[in-house]
Image (cartoon, rainbow, N blue to C red; front, side, top):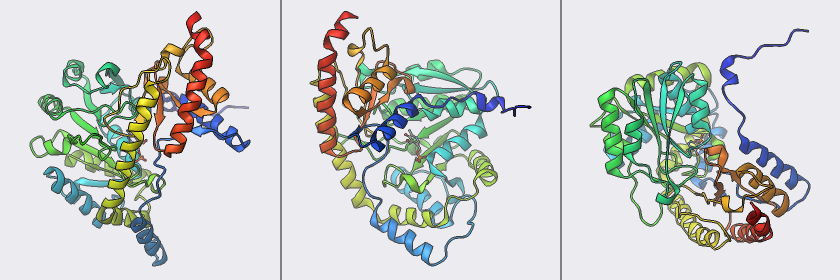
Length: 401
Ligand SMILES: Cc1ncc(COP(=O)(O)O)c(C=O)c1O
């Protein structure tokens, strides 16, 4: 019997190591085990009522056919207007593509930009899909490490030093998943200006735009788009901002040639995002500001509860994340003879303490684990207590190492 041959392209991407732990967590939950799940990067809030109602109405009224493949014009216009209003961005609706999640917009942009052997500069630790999407497109990831001691801040210097002949794009993700690190306005300007000089695209993933703590202001690359129109592209998402993960809606705004190319790919890959979901997203954009403010205030409370509690655990150090909704503690002091890194740590924590976290190795840092605080305060308290008991039990083992 002949075996089918898969493309070499598909061989370049790996299944995420994170999936193993989340699969095991689901199995344990199905067996009735009480698992505290810090794994999911998914808001625990309901989608805004205005969005649900608008989508329900659209569905009932038969808004169930194909739409233009770049999205419904009203939503494209509303997203473009929001960026113009908030950041003085120059993009018209024609340079605003509605995509299937922010993930869709990123994938299309990377496919549109990267040729075999091209380089994409990425600060690390980084969200798992960036390197895989780059490799799938045939590109090479040039990593620029950020430093936990510095709150994983994203600095221009090391990014500029990584730019080379083959660099086609720099990806920024501020606030960053998994670190919560952010880039300041001066560093952002320096990166954009350097990209502009070299004809490199700055792809700014602003999925966590609204999740900033301690009153910090957000530095959006959109604010530099009028000055650097051929350089700046922004990806955003309805998933986290409006607790609408399952609706699968995101967007890309940027230079006309890039948005047109991404739209062309989308036209042949998915066509339009779901028609009635887009109607719901428009309602969220226009009428769910109160919901967003309430969610962000709650995330701040949770962060302020979680981070000191983690730092009080033996051997754990955790910088307060400046944004997003993840804590990224260094747990390497608990490694020892029997735990050789973050994957083993996450597995043992799940099996012995029934707490699910994501191993930092998946993001490029084996000393850390990621804890999502998109869960109730009661779960945070329960989970941290179990975490503490697990670490206490490990103390003699770790000391032997
Ligand atoms: C940094 C980052 N970018 C993009 C996404 C994609 O989100 P979505 O496709 O749900 O819009 C995620 C989701 O976890 C993310 O963490």
